[in-house]
Image (cartoon, one colour):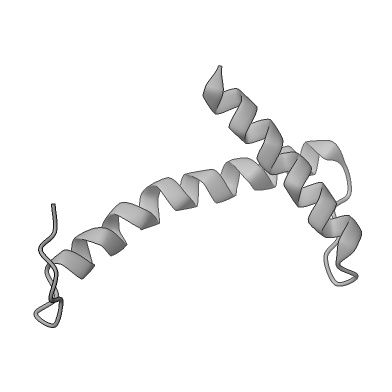
Length: 65
C-alpha cells in the first residue's frame, strides 16, 4: 500500500513539475505513472551501487555501516 502511494505521489509531483517548468512536458497521467516507475526503479538500482562505491573509496574518511 505504501509503495503504491509513493508511486502515485511521484507521478503527481512529475505533473506539477511539468506544469511549473516550461521545458518539461508530460502527455498524460499514464505517462507520468510510467516515468515515476522508471525513476523509482533507477533509484533502487543505482543508489546501492553508489553507496557501495563510496564505502570502498580509499579517500572516504567515515566508516560505512
